[in-house]
Image (cartoon, rainbow, N blue to C red):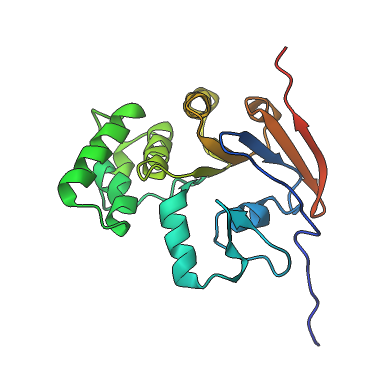
Length: 215
């Protein structure tokens, strides 16, 4: 029956500066996940260019893209994506293992990062022994432990109650104060207003790109 090309994105032209906190919004199917996957070097654009830290990733091979993800990017997922057999400290250490960091240095960095997100007393617990909010804190610590250039968060509060969700957003707000670059996908307008810039997509196009006025 042949095939039909489906275009998730139809000509996105944006520039995100170092230290910005950007939220991407829009209805289901508008291209949010595809855009985040391209920004995270998980997918390559079929046309056009994407520059990360001055490097055009559009033509890089899979091994080089993997290195880019390891060295420049930190991912926070809605479903946490923790390894259930590993403890908190072992889950956080994973990016450092792939960077070839020595065990002693890795353990020191991991303990420090766990403390920063309020998990100092939970280092040797398994994910199933943690609340949803605590599991997401592990995910954030894992994303931060390699000191990434950009933090990419896909609906990081989507599986959390309102109290836990606020605690997680407070962590992102503090990271923004520390000049971290954050790109977050969310459906929640209240969460988006914590960012300094909101990009709204519709049908693969940018419908609106505005700064958040705080009064």
